[in-house]
Image (cartoon, rainbow, N blue to C red; front, side, top):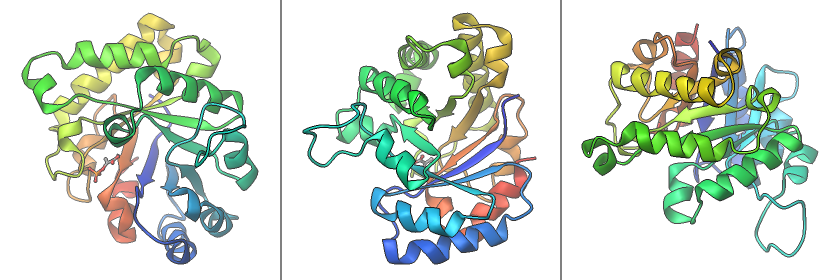
Length: 250
Ligand code: PEP
């Protein structure tokens, strides 16, 4: 369907001083990857990550951005700042940002539009909590998140967005959604996009699964028709494990 993309989300791990060597290691282990390989790093690691990725097939992403261009927003980072560093991707609306940093569907939409306007590829995260899954409202919730994230975005721009389906109960817990559960929601997301736009746009969108994807379970998840890659937390911090996941994305 969409282009295969395996993206690591380092979260608040790894130091700037560790970044250059680690990205070089990722690049060396994935030099013949048949999918896009991305490392999303903390802001302070981005310069070193971009320096290390130069001349390799690894792309660098940030883990957040602000939706304004500039101004009195102490502690924030703009899309222009990320572009200026050579960053190509940005994670938007990760559940940890929704949970701990008051990210909402509205700010996710503003950030997604700003990323697209500035030529960054947004990786927009959506996902349900365990309570929501058990209440049987997973797809209703995902539909709201997807529709709000894409509000006001043209079909041409929508095709550039990466959607990461990340069930909150599977993130960092070691509990993975089964391949069938993940496929069901990813197929649902594609259907929502087809309804918002058209089939061709929906097919062009990369839909990733994220949530305890690792070297052991990646192949089964990535074999599913509507799973076009992964957003990888813990396993992206180990270059060997990350390379196994990349190799599984064929
Ligand atoms: C994530 O945070 O995006 C994630 C999927 O984490 P983990 O792989 O550690 O569950």
